[in-house]
Image 1 (tube, one colour):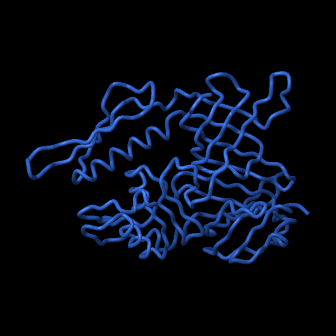
Image 2: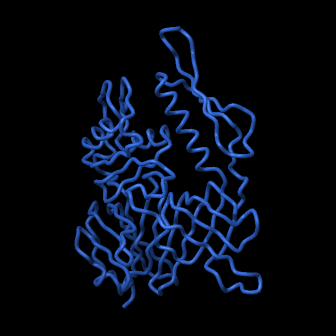
Image 3: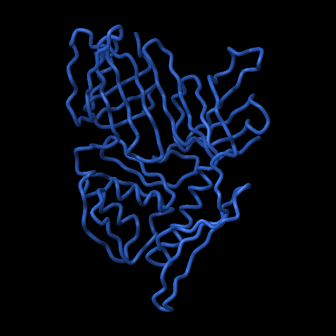
Amino acid sequence: MAWKDWDITMGGTSRIRQMADYLLSIEWTDNPGVSSDTCRLSFDDSFGQLALPPKRSVATVAYQGVEIYSGVVDSTPWRMTRGGGRVLDVSLKAFDTRGKAVETQNWHLDDAPLKAVLEKAASLAGVTITVDPAFATIEREYWNPLGESFVAFAEKLRHEFGATFKMRGGTNAVFAARGTGLSPFGQALPTVIGRVPAPSEETSGNIHSIDIDPTRGRPRSRQKRVTWFDPKTGEFKDKRVTVLLEDTGDAIDTQRWPAADEGQSETMANGQKTDAEQDAGVGSVTMEFTPDAFVEGRFFLKGARPGIDGLYRIASVSSRANRGGGGTTTLQLAQPNPG
């Protein structure tokens, strides 16, 4: 049977047996934030025989018993082309784009830790959130989403703290540290191995194409600087941190707006430092279908050339599987450690 290693549930019930004869392909993306995580199921709808899934229902996609995507049915576009047939797509998003996760919020908390702040925002959105201990106890005198939705507020804090914010199934979220070797939801991430074939053996290995420049994306500034106003002295002060990378520039990168206080200036500066170190280096690899590749995981490339081979951080993943059993995975890479 086609798709024998796969399972797709709709509303908690497995539907792969009914779908298998019509399912053409499965495509999904995995990114550091939440808004761009998507999954698309494409079906052969030559005779209009398929029933549309209920919008806003929860769907999960699993491969060999491992869940690779869980989201909410967002849209069901239908398309037809001459020679291309009639195709029904079922598009999933990590959260309900019509639900309370995108509803604006106006409230405040005084002298509260970040864990309590995110839990309050999540509860108003009907979401359960887990906050990494690395961030949970960070406290500020005043917190306010300023009319932002839960998703927008959490995304803003993700950038500020250099964290990862993810959602699953529309009702579960996590705010996690980067570079820990774990997925945002706490599972251990395997290191994906990419093998480049020798010039005389172009059909061996598992790499289809490579475009990597380990020097691209290097920070222009060695230091990150965030200012804040000290009411006790009546002066602006700053917090500076050093980016621990080679080939950085000499200029100081100063945030254009001041932080609210000394504590926020420190977290902002450290968040920018984390992002600069994690996102340095830009490149991509397309390889044979690799379902265990996830964002924040590691990719080890070998067989290319000195200066290119080595360990990289996976910045984003795009995968596609088709009913013929084939498929490809494209990795966006960062933070090179040539070996």
